[in-house]
Image 1 (tube, rainbow, N blue to C red):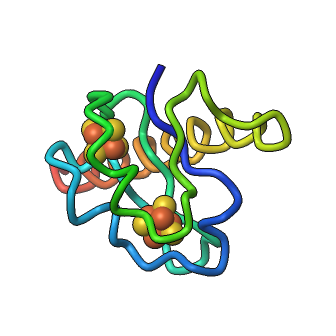
Image 2: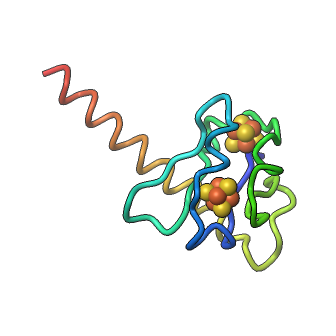
Length: 94
Ligand code: SF4
Ligand code: SF4
């Protein structure tokens, strides 16, 4: 299972993780409280875990009980981003 960003990222959102990811799995928007990891892109390399200053990133199987909902939150935010990207690409093709 892909890596997951949980609650400690909220309000920190410094982007340190995104700098170390070689597949660009991280994303966010100006309005979002946190960064997200796209589970369709993450290669499970674990490089981002040590880069996070607040311990917000977990292997999918190790997400603490109280933050299990963040597994779906990362996935749904990533699906929404992919949808927006597709719509943007289709707009460019017209
Ligand atoms: S585990 Fe590796 S591939 Fe996945 S988000 Fe972290 S740095 Fe990127
Ligand atoms: S390094 Fe940690 S706190 Fe910073 S944006 Fe990434 S997950 Fe959030």
